[in-house]
Image 1 (tube, rainbow, N blue to C red):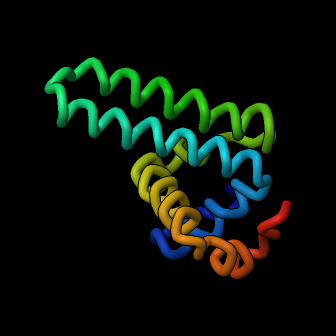
Image 2: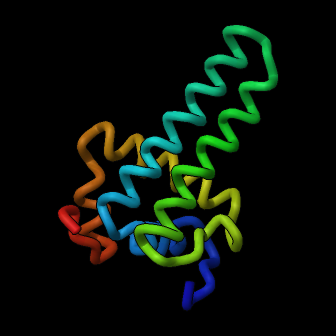
Length: 112
């Protein structure tokens, strides 16, 4: 990240540019699903081991997207909370078919 973000609204387009390759975003969607599944399983079973599954599964997918696809460093290392929020914001915008306008505003092609 070349410029330090002082707010989430400044961070959001930086986050999207760090996820410019569609395959990287797809791996992040898998990561988000792992996290949501783990939370649901903890709520359903009461077994806290699902948290480990959620963390390992989520980071495995997301970091593969950065280290193997985007060839960049995850923003989690500099802004962990904002990155988590942005991960789920990106996921739900994508699921709702509204991510394209955010990508375009950040200067990212939705098609890669």
